[in-house]
Amino acid sequence: MKKVILDSELICPECGHKELLEMPTDACQWFYECPACEVLLKPIQGDCCVFCSYGSVACPPIQLQQMGETTEGPCCG
Image (cartoon, rainbow, N blue to C red; front, side, top):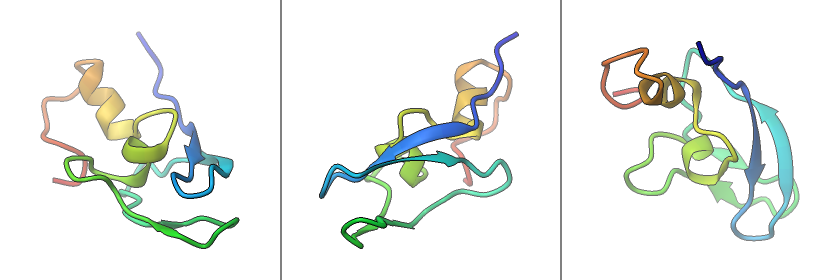
């Protein structure tokens, strides 16, 4: 059985700043302010959160979906 990865490297599309962050397991992260350039990141249309748009790893609910561990819809509905 695969394990859900909780750490994702978030990469700012504006300045390229990279930061390793622990993803929440109980909520979506819809916004994130880049500490380097202060741009407010929002999910790309069709993605559920900033980790799915700009992270090295998809958020935990999407990972579970991809592993077939849940049949629920997209993260946070």
